Image (spheres, rainbow, N blue to C red):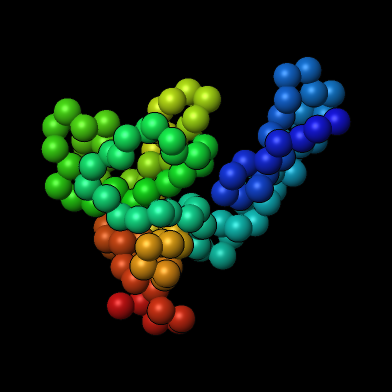
Length: 130
């Protein structure tokens, strides 16, 4: 059986007609639950912080961005400030994840982690959050 995995967390994806769907889903949910148990929840790797949606042409499935303030109306990301936008290639659409207290991402452009605390994404440097 050829199995695909989610681009960020590496969860096994369920294929149509998969006889082991319940087992695969159970493993993925347990892994997610375990990662959230420590109070921190890893959302994924983001390319950059942006205030406008990039062109979908040429984007790879799972490409993610942290949405900053200042998104203008008419943009796909309008009203989604502070959320993480993940490109879904099969649907040619953006999926959005709202952060919760303690959620974190790795920003490739800045080469640092950012953690969501008290309604704001803050740089995370070691054990100290600035």
